[in-house]
Amino acid sequence: MKEVPEWAQEWQMLTHACILWAILFVIALIHKASYFTAYAIIAHEKARRRRHSPPSNNNNHSKVPEALYSDERVPFVRSHVRPVVIKLIYLFRWSRSSIHQARALLSPQTAAFLDSCYTTICLCVCFLYIVGTYIHQFPFYIKFALLLWCGISCVHLVVEFFASESPLRLTLSFRFVVGCVCVSSVYASANGLWLNLNFLHAFSALRLYQAPQADAQQIRPASTMVRLVASLTLQFCIFMYMATCTVQLFELLGDPTRALRRETYDLDWSNTLYFAVVALATVGYGDFVP
Image (cartoon, rainbow, N blue to C red; front, side, top):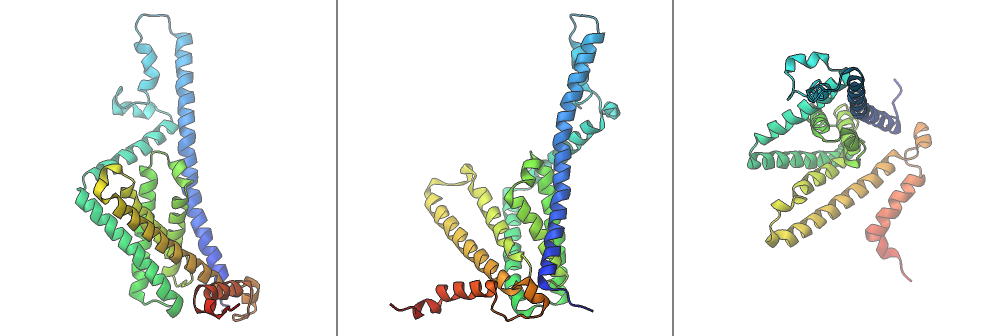
């Protein structure tokens, strides 16, 4: 059986991430289009009733169209008369309110503990990525744990999508795209792909750490400078980690055309870039003399 080159497996992994993102993006587009359709339906109902209803001092008839789309003005049993797009809007609204109610049941200590666990697991996945670039193979229990984390990450991504006030804006954000790539990368690593993009979990850990920092009510004036220094230090460390992992990724992938001919150790452009960065950043810099 012919061995699949590393760059082909990377491309397949990115394809899976694009499919996941495209599915959620299409759902967000349908959700946004349903709002415009609902407004058009309500406006059409109002115009039709104004044309066919006799003038009256009672304005209750003008509220009938909105009553078809509101659970507060009409019993829920009449929801079957609503158009499909209105039902889709209420599905998103119901899911968002249910998620917010479930979050409200958690105490601040429990929420902080769950965020800490999520951040710790992200950092562990980053550590496993470094180990995987050396051993190229994980035991079965590590693969099972990665597969379990893939499911948790996928559920977290979907919950964040349905809990968002604007799903379309969320899907177009950089952090959401990174989340889709992380889910696909963990799934690929659980299936034996040791050269993946799991190092992007560092970005997810940084975003989760900075989320409560953006809330001014949770920042005490006495600790503002300490929090700022800690945040800048963490950002610098994660930037250096992701930058070095990206350079290493291109160095290990090499030139795809040469990989097909199994010329792994040829000095192509990616290997040249890797050795240049390492030489300038480490002991090689001391070899330059005037």
